[in-house]
Length: 234
Image (cartoon, rainbow, N blue to C red; front, side):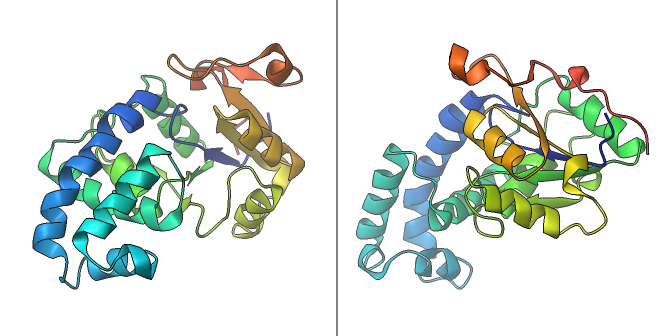
């Protein structure tokens, strides 16, 4: 494959969905009460608080209730994602949170980097949360940010199931034609949107991911490991 840029999803692609659902989400809810009681009026917390709709930031209790409501529905709203990233920061820095990358991920990222490929991340989680995740991994050394060129989320790119979002990401890297981009994701709707934009795209099948139907698999390249991705050197 003649690929210049590898665009990666996170959840269910580079790390287990369970890390997000069973570790990160509960941690955010656990950290929320103490954060609200100690930082409600602090300048560092203000941007995250003020991004919420006025009716939901009238008091810490109203704010907390709205956060719980949104998270119970797993809604990918930018202001919620930004808050979650802020709450996770302490967990990563303290060592409580470590991203368990799939074993094939770190070696392949280094291989792509050394062969001249650009590695770009695109996730519904905020850019700051993405950077924390790749800074604190189970790899050795744990910080993989030096391998990554850029990060995109639903704020600076758009919804992950829309063709225009992938077109916007490509436009941020002049000199790399869309047909030389490869997007890897476990989400079939995202893969279809990337293909509509002109990218090459594979569906990543990992343990713990949602089962794909026969119809969803039709016409798709399925991989269970990054080691199955063979791209030529630049």
